[in-house]
Structure formats: structure tokens, C-alpha cells
Length: 261
Image 1: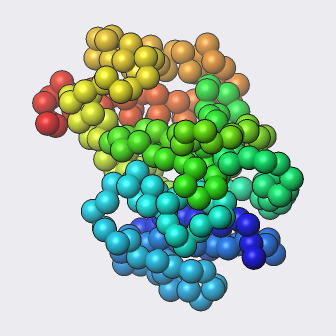
Image 2: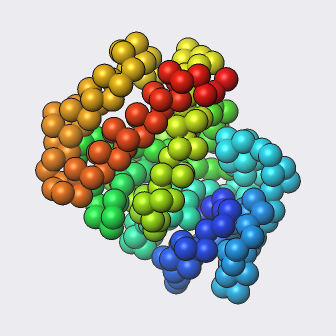
């Protein structure tokens, strides 16, 4: 019996799904995908490669509700669940290292390092690396139900360790799709700000105390200059213009224009 289940949620991920499957070839683990009603070739491609595919019980479930359901499912009782999104990469040696940790250490959940690739180049600076809780024994991880920004926590008394295992967010998307996707994120963030910031981190609350538009420039200067984003070269400049300025400006336009409720 395989100790590790690699899980993913999908909707119209035909651009990524073959790459996602290929990185686990030859590794002793179970691949499971929960699909939210894809209308492209995502599901046929998965089934043709022998991947187990389940449909969501509730299409209208939030992101957090979906993953809480997965981590609590009887399907994976006694197993470790590793979440790798369709547009993410993990090296096979890191998966094998994770399996070794599971077998040799008395641990319930494992933190991984998440990196970002932009236009195919790995970002190293500008605070683009984060620690994420992505692997855990069934029932040992919970997601807070927030509109935006994943909030993932170990359940009470869960034993966690931090590892150097790396996952890379590396989407294959055109600029027009990036704008469409991040406009949706901007709408969610603007809605969150208009409703309440009480549960957000102090740094986020302080950010929204600054004047609109000006705070966008502050974030760009901090990440690109003070945190060394410029060391990633031209690609780093484009990344921080997109994520620290364009995205943040979209949020402020929506907030100040009262386009959200």
C-alpha cells in the first residue's frame, strides 16, 4: 500500500495536466484528481494515463471547503496527502525525499518551500519564496475559509517539521490570461478589504492603512529594491511590475471605485 497520495483539484487544466502527471512517473504513490467540471480535455487525459478522477460533491464549494473535504475523506484514511496544483512542479528526488521522511520520522505534517517561476525563470529574490503546509496525514491539516490568500494550519496537537523540499509555481499562461485571472483575484481581495480585515495578518492590515495607490508604490520599492527583486534581472522587473504594481493597482481601483460589496 502506498503511504503517499498526491492530490490536485482541476478545472480546464489541459495546458498543465500532462506535465503534472509526467513528474510522478515511476514513483510509488497514488495520483488523485478532483475535477470541478472541466469542459476541455483535462479529464480524458487523466483517465487515459490511469489517474483516479473524482467529481466534486458540491461545485459551489469554496477552495477551503474542497481541501478540507479531501483531507478529511475516508478515501485517504491513514495516508499522507501531498497537494500539488496542476500548474506546480516538484522534482522526483524531492518526492522520494518526502516519502523517506514519512517512513522514517514520527511526523503528522510537513512544510515545503514554494518558489515562483515567471516566464519560465525561477525567482530567487524579492520575497518570492514562502513556507507552505502542503503535506499531511489525513485529518491533520485544515484550511480557513477565506476569500483570498490560503490560510493553512495543522490541527491541534499535530507534529510538524520544516523541510527543504521545493515546489515551484510555474503556470503556462499568456499575458491576457494572467490579466483575466488576476482581475478575478483583485475582485476577491477588494471584497475582503471592504468587508473585514480583522483576521488578516498585521502586515496586511498595516498595508491597507496606507493611502490607496501610494501603498502600491511602497510594496514595489520594498520587494524590488530592499528585498533584492532586481537581482532576478529583467524577468524579476517584469514579475514585480505585474504582481507588486499592476495587481495591487487593480485592487485599489476596485476599492476606491466601489465596484465591490
